[in-house]
Image (cartoon, rainbow, N blue to C red; front, top):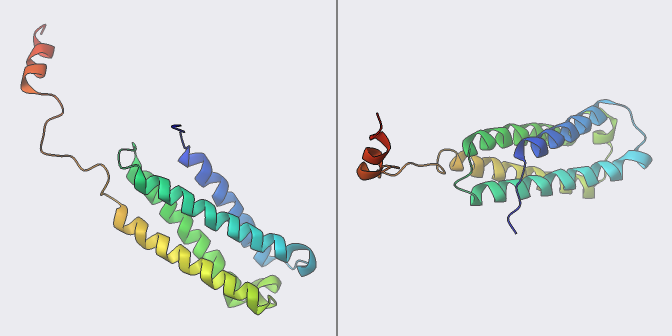
Length: 147
């Protein structure tokens, strides 16, 4: 089944979720209520970024592919900044997380950095034009007969 992926909408939604995580780090929240959900959100964003990158790297003929790589790159940067803030102790939640959650965030940040590298290596490799014309000389002649 061919399914159309709307990268713009998916990236927008993820951007908003990342912004929410950034806001949560700035607020003094109750860890017992929000920490587990915040970690779940980090997992969700990480998995979704993996999915979008896989789809984008596999579809070399996607229109505006490089634009989507740029959008994904910006999103990855935002995500890695939130993860770094989480690890550096920004906000009450980040400063008091357990070692287990800290290791999880370190692992996810590493995966984000790997994706950023893949994105950087993939930009410009999709829509490479071959030396062959899109319209042959005979087709062009036929098209221009009426002029």
